[in-house]
Image 1 (cartoon, rainbow, N blue to C red):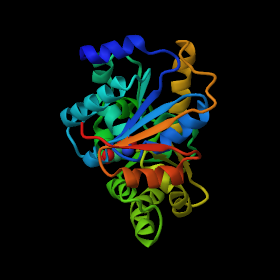
Image 2 (tube, rainbow, N blue to C red):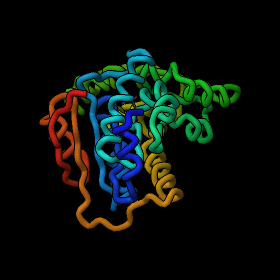
Image 3 (tube, helix red, strand yellow):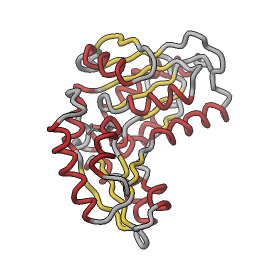
Length: 276
Ligand code: DGL
């Protein structure tokens, strides 16, 4: 950790913002839950759209990118950092916790709740190759392996569509059909959205999956986990009538602004593009 980062760590307090990042716009699906769960907190969000997708990148690569982003958020005075990306969590959460002193919250696909709820004992999981390679996914799926069959799909094209701002239409239907049909053939009754870009497509996924299939993701769970850490460390802000939500992108700020203002339930400011 740099001395600069440390200096900010020691000056932050409960009024400091919460940092959130993803390989791109996917983490907005987590930010939406965080905004609802923590209405008095300020937020800073970093979308690394220039380097998306993270899914096919090596662990070393994703760790190096994550480290630069966490440093950026720490330098902005963030009191906690939420990795709103399954792939970056899989690759880098442990090294980020070693490198930085702020609490680092990670997320993983909601495999456990799906395994506990399934009746058919077949669960579909959509995620990136980086997430499927990671220790979190392996450990969780190993625990339920004896009782539940997991059926995996790397839904790479959904990340690309989301980054282009395309969320519906014939192309989206065709791509989703391609991922969902094999899962339905395996009799899944739950599909886990194990990448934060995928919940943008939830209505289409639900329609194509049909009535008997429940779609679940981790965004509510990570928002509650973040709140829990803030409450139990006395760092939760409880009064802030004019909270700020500032967004940064390593790519086009206009695109991020368009998508964020359409998707989030409150107005956000896009501060401009950043080259880390
Ligand atoms: N949104 C990310 C995740 O949750 C990664 C997508 C990507 O960049 O490949 O895994």
